[in-house]
Image (tube, rainbow, N blue to C red; front, top):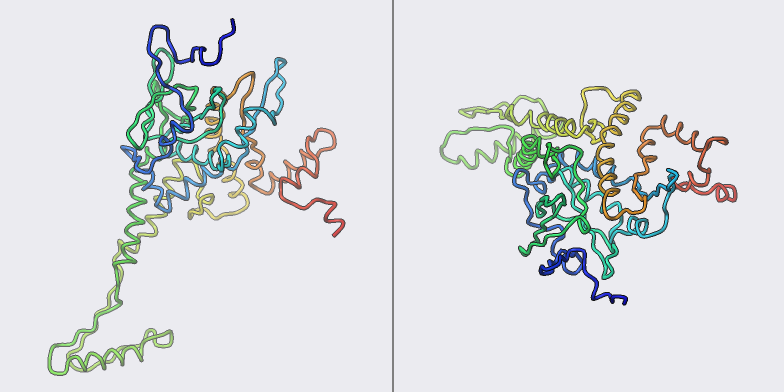
Length: 392
């Protein structure tokens, strides 16, 4: 006798026990998405990202990684690897959620990895258990525990409701580094929390100087006496008429009586504010392996073609551990089956500098060993088709 769908035992049911609800669907888990009140205990990531230096460094890594296409592949029994362009996994990578492109979801993943050490991707399934869509959870609301060799995830919603699910419903993407035996990754931003806090404090100090520091360039002191208001007004008008503008700059102030002039200047600490901000940005960039020129930070070295090419190579080496961590997490999850795995297309990353771009394009178009056509490359580079140029 064939069982009907309602009679089938769910994977989380155990004989002799009550049914435990570990399913994660779009409707039941909607409050579990990224919350507005989640604050890490050691690093306020949302607050830290408001600092311009922190944002420039983190976005350089997260947006560059998210801009690389994530593709589905399958390895056959003969160890032959081929691209998968249709099917459940390929469709999910192309359309991870309604109105959410894959690049946006990946940027959330890498941002979470950098700021919290982990990214937790919720796998929302339909009534038949097939993956329907993906969404990134707030890492501060997810707890990880290991029971009987299985990883379980306790997700707390903004309403305080807690739900425990397994790896069928959550894909954990850990940062490239973690402590031995730990279940969560290490956030590089949390390791340099003092530098991140200093970057935020410096931005706040600069803002307060502009908002509250109505600085005057000098003081003119006049002793009290009769008609002092008229005297001050005449003195102000005379000084402005003689010294205002570029033509009056540097002139001597000639006054009579008991009038004194005192020049004021910015404090040495405020003069070093910009230099301190550059040092802090360089520190955060060094932790993430980002060359200063990539995040538009000043560098002590003059930027020549040689140094630019070297920094591009260093940046690519710094990104590969993050890309590899994401690939391994997704490939080892329940999203992939039957020899399937995912891999980033690193071609855009290899084309960061002009020399490498020319070499890669020549190899791709080689008449013997090449694997692409001119039309494919022109489409990828958003260039018009050669036929259209000829007709024009």
